[in-house]
Length: 231
Image (cartoon, rainbow, N blue to C red):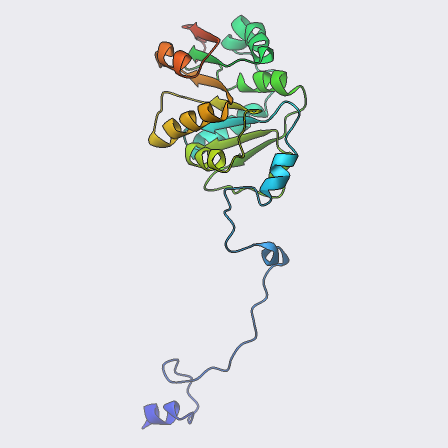
């Protein structure tokens, strides 16, 4: 019958159930894929030793964001300059002085005051150089350029991995955005950061500052109820 003929290679049909296709040549992959190691942890820098060697003189700023979406928002804010905010108008000079002082501090300020935008001037004061910002999360992996970043924005799970691999050290400043959005991963990050001896700067709109001020050894806490009436 026809099916039998096809199974033996006879006939002119090309029924996929019976026809034996010739072996195809190996697929051609993009050149960059040849450098990808299948077992590498893509949430860590490809060369951890290079990341440690290239640490800026004042350490790095590691910003821990509560969500992947928050990473993008913080990255955008760090790219903006000259934005007038309530926090900058009323407390900008004070916060820059705290940043230069070398000790940890907290900011409790409502939505619309410019907390996230305030990360940039604080980072510039600490680093004393132009910002080179990158993001590592489940959608954006670490790259060979990661060691050149002096500001790294990560989610809590990635931060915990970096602490465990000694990629965040006592030379670094850890900025915790929206610290009131607590989780098991964030609590681990705070504990690991305390053990490593990092400097903590933390931000929140609603948290009772007394607990985190004591737990993280904050030298100062700014609490303001000011808001921008235009928002």
